Each structure stands twice: as structure tokens, then as C-alpha cells.
Image (tube, rainbow, N blue to C red; front, side, top):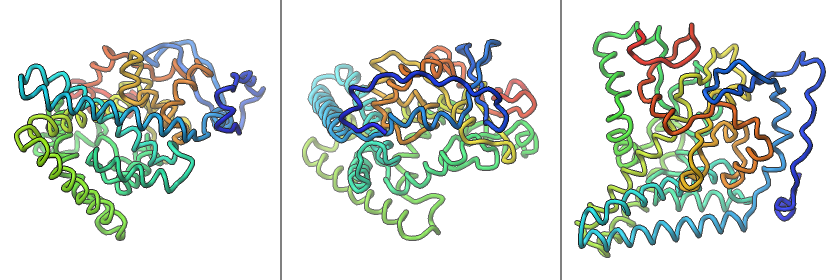
Length: 369
């Protein structure tokens, strides 16, 4: 394994040849079509990816502190500028408020990497940085980490849905619902609810209570309650500095906008037409990681703003790779760019997807029924 120091002198390794017989290997199909549905395909043994990606697992503490400092400085500068601008014009402040919301997404990605033990080499440092960032992102660190670990452990497994992910029914399950239950599910999948009302509810209200973990010991409660106390103190200080009106016009919209963008990113990372779901007996982690997660190919500035989380298939394959090293993985193994690739325009078509069709093995809209 490479040291943090030697990483920057690391040269791309020769790509190992695929072993002769692939019997007893878990095989991953790599699609060359950007929509993941093309005809030309190559095959790679999935278990080899762990070894291939090992050089990227080395934590770089200096780089982590630098990313944290830059992100924090930009966020604070934008926040202050928005508070000043709002005194003159809402239109002048609006772009800054949106940018501040996007920077909150990047802060969340830093917290997210702490949760995977990827940002720093020290577990204790990851924990404390993650806790502090959780106060800013309104996300209780230990509670979220437990729920997110469950998501990673069962992503793409039809029997393990409903924890840390977007609720998704199969066509068969939807048809068995009552009229009232269908209406509620349709409301939940409505874009206005999903990306505007939902994020506000999630970050402002639901994260104030350890939903799903109330009977799982003291840790989830401690995580949520201490984060709530930190948020209350932070909000009080901010209101004392800038006043209640400015706080309501600047900070809360940043939270909601950041939450909406974060939920959108998470949505398109798993809710695209040719994503991958399997029954428990057929589910295999590595295959689902690559084919059940998208590569959201955004322009580089937006990749930076969102912490490269659009390279989500690689993240699910090896979650301990720090966000700042994900682009290097694609440069070393460009074939990974061909799996689950979505452009921004293509991602807009994913909004109407709502049900998993087990016969066609893809997500479909309500109109397909």
C-alpha cells in the first residue's frame, strides 16, 4: 500500500489482464454506452477491484486539513457576503445564498468522508471533525453514520430497502396498495415534496430525533441530543450577531437549498432507469455497488462544489477512498467512466422514475403502469 507521501509520485499501474477462465469469479459487466444500455461490453472480475483501488485508500491528513480549511473559508466568506448583500437587495443576496447552500453540500461531503473513516487516518479525528461539521450541516454524526452504513451494506438489495435511502416500491408492491397508500406514495415521490419540502423536513425536523434508532441504545440519542444542543447554541450566536431577520432570510434558506441539492445528488446516484436491484439470494455487493450507483458526470467546477460525490459508483465500491482522490481513480481506470454515466440533462429524465419493474429490471414512471 502506498504511503501518503508517495501517493503524489504514484504512477498508473499496468492494468492486469483478465484471468483466463472466469469460473468462480464474480463478473462485472462494464457498459460502453453512456446510458449503460449499450451493446459493446467488457467483463472484469469484481473481486480484483479491491486490490486495484488499494493505492487510493491511504488517508492524506495534510490534504484533508487543506480541503477542510478551504471549504470552511469559502463557506464563511459567502455567508458573510450574503448577510451584507441582504441589507441592500434580496436579488443581490440570492446568488450568494444559493452558493452558500452548495457549499453546505461540500461541508456535508467532508462529514460524510469522516463517517467512512476516509478523510483522516485517525478514527478519533474523523469522529470529532464529523461531530463538529454535523452542527453546521444539521446532521447528527453518529446517528447518521449508523444509518448510512446500513445503506451501504444493503444498497441494491430488495430485502434491505428503507434505511438511509429513497423509499422505492416495486411495481407489484405498488399494485397491492390501497388507494390511500398509493396517493401517499405518489405524494412522497412528487418532485416538489422530494426536493423542497422533504429536505426542509429532514434537516430541520427529522434529524432532531433518532428516527429508526430510538431503541438501539444510548449512542443515537447522545448523538442527536448533543448535536441539537450545538445547533441551538450556534443559531443563538448567529442571531445575536446578525439579527433574527437576517438569520431567517439568509441562513435558513441556505440550509434548505443545501438540503435540496444534497437530496437531488443522492436521488440521481441511485434512481436512474438502469440502476441495479436484486432479490437477497441473488444480490452481490460489488456488482450492486458499481451498477446500482451512477457516475454523475458534472462539469469540473460543480464536481468540486459537490465534493466529487457524483463519482458514486466508485465510492460505493470502496467507500474509504477520500473524496479528493475519486477523480484520480477514473483517470487510472477510465473504463469506470462508462458505467452508469449520467449527464445533467440525462439526470432530469430521472425525476419521473418511481417504481422498480422486476420484469424489465429497471426503474419506471407511474405512467408505465
